[in-house]
Amino acid sequence: MNRVTLTTAIAALRQKLSEGFSAQRAPAGYQPGRTLGQLQRNLGLARFEQVSPTLARADLEDDSLHLEIRERTESQLLMHLVMTEFSLCLPASTEGAARFALHHGGAIRRTGIRCRQRSGEGALLGALQARLQQDSALQAALMLLDFKRLHIELHARQWHIRLEHMGGSEVVNRLPAFRRYIALSREQRDALLAALAGLQRVVGGL
Image 1 (cartoon, one colour):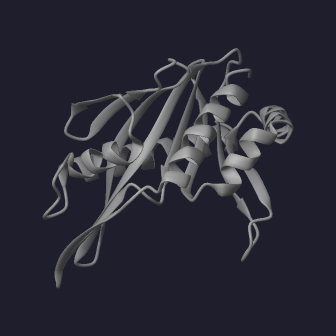
Image 2 (image 1 turned 45 degrees about the horizontal axis):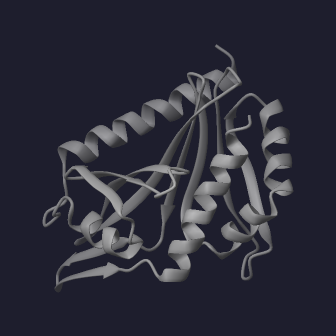
């Protein structure tokens, strides 16, 4: 097993263990579906269906974008966070496996969008970066967007895009007791949908 394959296998195992632990140990005071319900009002989409307490599906009216939205919890000392993750699944014309992370460049001011390869086929990084740079509408949307995580993965001839926004989330504190929902603003909502549509446009061609 080469180093890249080993690194990919270890990362996958860590993710599965983390997901399994989270599923078994839900934070005290967590109310599944509460954050999704509030996010639904922020998004204002006519086609929004909550298919389980922690999973929803949403579509734009013109059928140009089909999303899955999932609640994810993160426990901290005497508190927990409930984040919402937006995901797309697209067919790939490329075989193999790869994982990329996108983030804003610049320590204080945003200076651009950086793409870092975490694992997989090295040749894909150049192709993805070129398509990202050529799509000015996507660049503009991502520069405005306050996202926490943005991962692009290739697996089993499918691209998986997962974006976690800083808004549309909830902070729940145990001591002192309080619960605060961080709303998704109108500007961020528009940038989010534009970014997801742009990522679909860019990644769907690979």
